[in-house]
Image 1 (cartoon, rainbow, N blue to C red):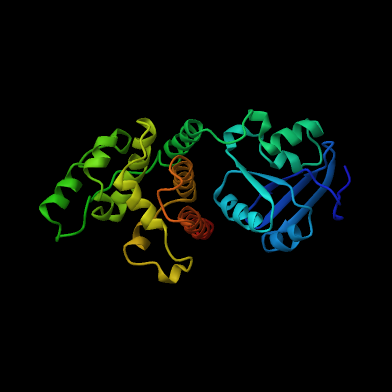
Image 2: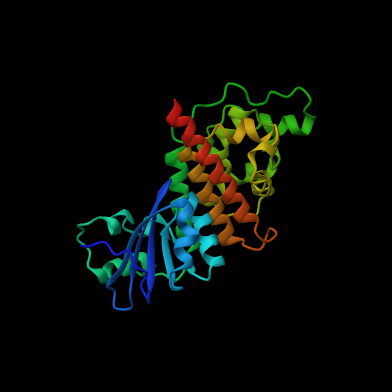
Length: 288
């Protein structure tokens, strides 16, 4: 199939395969025929899409998808983030040979293959819970629950309630009773019990926790890492890229089930913070 890099006059839908530095675009016309196939650098996102006709844009859920979605929405496009569990990986759309018809590719990109117009909260929860269990499966228990010697009796009681507990056994009742424990945990304990705090809500279909408010508050911060404080840095920067992506899936679910519980753009800033954390984590992995 020949590469098509000229600007088409009409497009029905565009699919984006989002890479770390390079994005692959596949555009289809109203008849399901490929009208655009293009590879661009991340910094070329806005200049490229400014020249394209406004249409639906589909992308697989990932950390950068939220940034791409907001950027394209500002340009007048209709972005749709599709959970990975619903779609054939978008990289297949960019391969020179594939076993999908053009019509099937349109279905995949728009998410109609899953028969959905918007993502169901329960299905999002199931996918995010699976991501959490996979990402945090090998994180070791902490040697120290808290390094502070200045905890009040109440704060100490919250911490000690987790003593010897596997993160998979954290219940939503415990999360509710110890809503501020994220502030008292030592960094290793924070990272170990973070998946338990998130997973408890999925298992019991609950999202109304002050602990979740605390986590969102932690992540809603300046886009300049230089301004990140001494509480945030020793904890969140210990997470691996896979663990950060699982947190992103949890935050995406939370935004879907309680979109109005925080000020406008809060969830967007949370995803921006997670993107920066992920890039930093990936750099540490590549250097090790």
